[in-house]
Amino acid sequence: MLQDIDKLLTDASKIYKSITGQDPIFNSKLDNKIINTYSNLFQKDEINLDKLQDWISKNPFFGEMIKKKRNQSILYQDSIVIVLGWLISNNTILVPKMWPEDMNCLEDLYINMGISTYGIF
Image 1: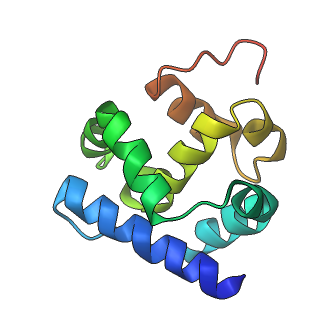
Image 2: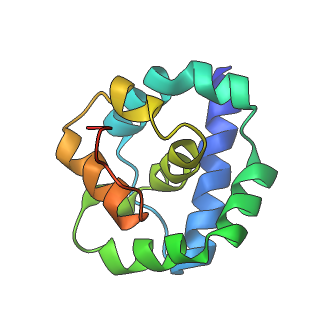
């Protein structure tokens, strides 16, 4: 599992750099919290590079949002944001129930993804 998670983060970093032209800034504390919190969902959904790339290609606004928000929040500087975007798209209601950090950060991501937070938060 750990090897799969390392590969997932490496794959997300490649996608991040292809979108922004910049290397992500890793926040290992945040990454570890998110990975540990949602590990069951990653396994259940069998997340991988192909799924992330497919999701990004179908949601080009997400890359634009990352570029726009990159200087405003550490979350948008970390490649984990790509994994979170995919996770939110596939588990919209479940993600906030398990979120291990400040809800304002997650709610901002939902709003920027165009997902109503009414009744979810």
